Length: 358
Image (cartoon, rainbow, N blue to C red; front, side, top):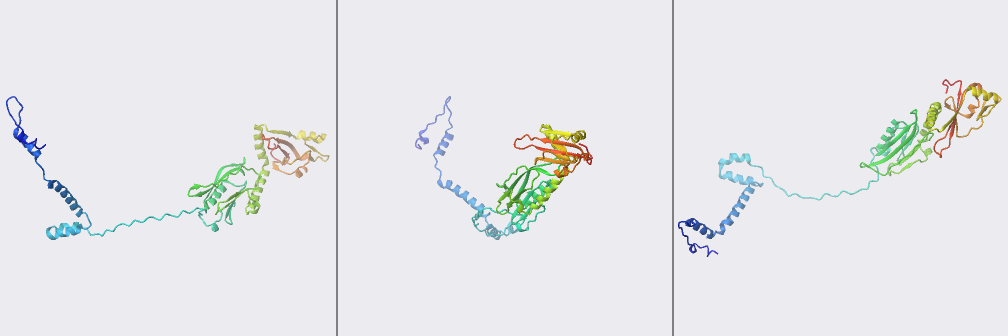
């Protein structure tokens, strides 16, 4: 190809009206293309670039202080500037990487206690720590503040005692209904230690439960009589029963209003005139008066409740009453809508000692 590009093979003619060629410029361009370049110049560029990189690296390595010292030795005038910029030589060591040992997986079987088991002392009478167990009881006399105290005791063993709902009697005196849930906490997780308790109404002896602190084994409804909490249940039950008995008239009003709304109560009221007629004629209509004019009943079953002057009473006390002592007798027969619950009756007797007439 170079043979054909030689200038000796080209003829350049300049004439009027024809194309104009600059012979000297075109010829020099062709000669430049045909000129061969020496290889050492191309290779030298790369060597120069590498040398520059090595020079830069020399002043960035830890031994740059030695190089600076040699320069100062040859040029003493630079000593003043070199002293401020000379850095201390440091010896670098290669890092040694070690694998972090894997932690052993341990199965969590015990509860992490905030307090040792032997030192646990309950601050409420409804919870005790006994022989590695936590025992608790619910009675009719338990109050919202007692539920909070129970929750604090369960927190000591890393358990959560939750109250889903509670219901008290119309006078807000004793507990009628409660729903509970107990969870075991382990690293913020709720385990399968959940118990739901059915509704209960007084009279009840108490809802008793026990949990083994170490194993988490829970029992509900065990033999309360074997527990130290048994006496607590008896005392609270007596308190609730006494209260209801003393205030039976108030509860009877709530019962009557509730059943009257559903037409499930039938009442018979005997005023003083009716009682006088029965006493004189000897007519028997579920009750009567004997020859001594003492009160007697034709039938009195276990499903019948006797109330005298607004308080729950016994049949033996009713038989001591004379006609002259009584102002009114009311019979209330309750028929719950459920067929599974038998009807019951309340006989309310009011005497002259009762200040409020029915």
